Image 1: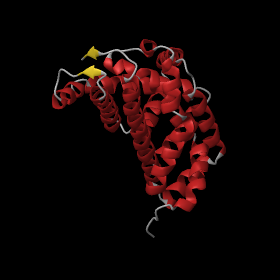
Image 2: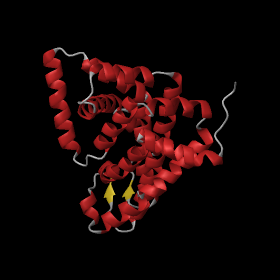
Image 3: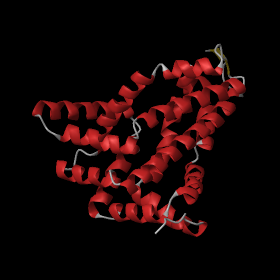
Length: 260
């Protein structure tokens, strides 16, 4: 039987699915990443004074981002894939995992989480615990590897070009050279993503057994769950990129001008 595209009538079901999986909280965490945006062009949120908070809260409004995600998913998520994913996340293990992931997403102090995760990884390595390999397996299942690097580079490129178009910065390179410079950082970025993902997972899943995480990995590796995460990752990056572009235009009205 061919999968059917979910209709607009299923919007409430999709919204419930986002809540059940915790993806709504993952979307909310995009707002926490807003402070990283000015750093792409060598600036800091503090450079924009008290206006920063107002602008960031407006552009990264949680309700608006969730609504946009629902718009995308109404057009792309199929009934069979949705049913499969709902089945796993409705289990006791699935709900515990979502609760842990949500708590981790909303930790504002990323440095504290990173340090704690590093300490956990160090202890696991010293003990010869196979959990490190289990965590790496989970990471491969949900991060889409190379695609994540390309998506982050696209977010950076679109933010810089929006800042240039808004007159916020003056670009000393043509767009092709800028893309080449970003691509030259792929190796370093890939390693950073892998390291960050591993330490974040170590922190988020510290209360789970290896067997439970292997069960989770099995679930994530099914074709249906792979489709779900491909969609969710693509949507999250598109929403991030579009919001960063809007941020550049708003900040250009009040911010300093720098050469890059």
